[in-house]
Length: 285
Image 1 (cartoon, one colour):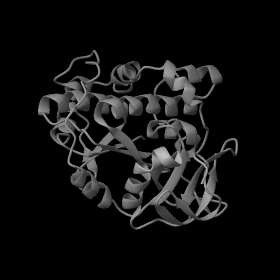
Image 2 (tube, rainbow, N blue to C red; image 1 turned 60 degrees about the horizontal axis):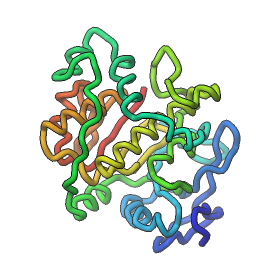
Image 3 (cartoon, helix red, strand yellow; image 1 turned 180 degrees about the vertical axis):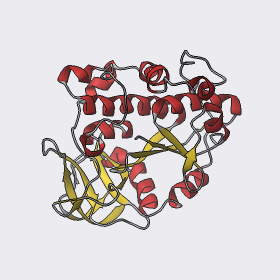
């Protein structure tokens, strides 16, 4: 197997993992090859994700769990995962996670109840949380991923998992995930691509979480939901509050718990369930 080359259609052997039949996936907007995904959901997709993540240096392929849009929308007999308009990941290097989150903090949530939701912080974004150094036990991470429901298993040729949304052009039905009145402040707007800009903004935040908390992209799909697996989640409530502020600014909803239930949209509510939590889930309207 050549490093970074997506498998052909059919069954695949990727590093140590034998995968069931899959198909190459193409972007909706410009028909570029962006991924490979299993034809059917895998009941043990989480375990395969773990093994493929460990083999990334060898294969050059990043695994990602995929969920089709509900109800399942078929495009030529293939599930729709939201692979719309790929963006140039090199542009992420020019962006700042703190700037992206500060804009979400002051813009997307500018409503009468925002002051309550932001407590104990004020109108100004409190800045990026410091890194967590203590990892969860490997067995706990394995249990968290293995307990996830069946899913399609995707592969993306990428240097790091945080770049996957931009590489595949993740944007549900080609519509931007947020309700900002103005385009995002990123280099991608020079290309006239609001959807592409948003996938880059997601990418720069994921890169920052990857560095500070060992958070790797776990799942995306056509249902506008994103999950990460955090190897080093906050271990104290104080740090959890700071990370919760970032999550509050990042997405329309944060989900937590065994069933990933909606958490009321306030920093304090998010923080309460974030201490030691390995899986973080987000949703956009």
